[in-house]
Length: 140
Ligand SMILES: [Zn+2]
Image 1 (cartoon, rainbow, N blue to C red):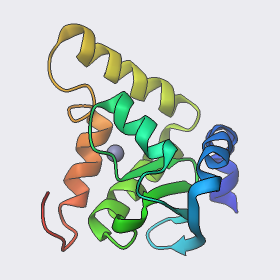
Image 2 (spheres, protein in one colour):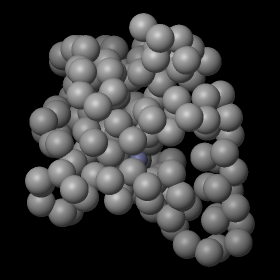
Image 3 (cartoon, protein in one colour):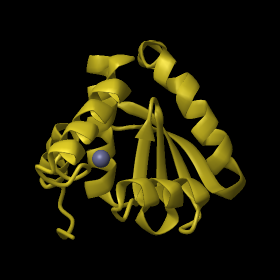
Image 4 (cartoon, rainbow, N blue to C red):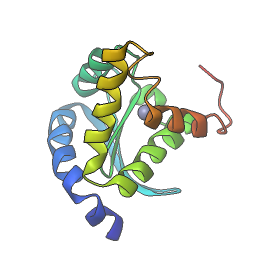
């Protein structure tokens, strides 16, 4: 509960994403791993993850916003991705309301300076991918 409150500003934003995902949600559960989160398993072709993939030009299987982790059905038990998303929750707890702004700052900076891939080279993503590597699933 304390964690949910510390993520409240982001959770308010995430709630709108939740409304987009809800019609295509298959299973919603509260998970308690390294951090507590609400896992929303969506259909593989769900609109929310399609939009995310379009915006990042990457194949997005999971998305974190506040206490919500949205994940495609075929990746619902993929520990590598779930660990990756939990790193984002920790980042959100650390940076609170500043998180989306700093994330977008790096995204824009990389894009404008053409210094790499705005998504994959984002320091927040690098940290999450680095951590996700330790999970015992095949590297994609
Ligand atoms: Zn990520």
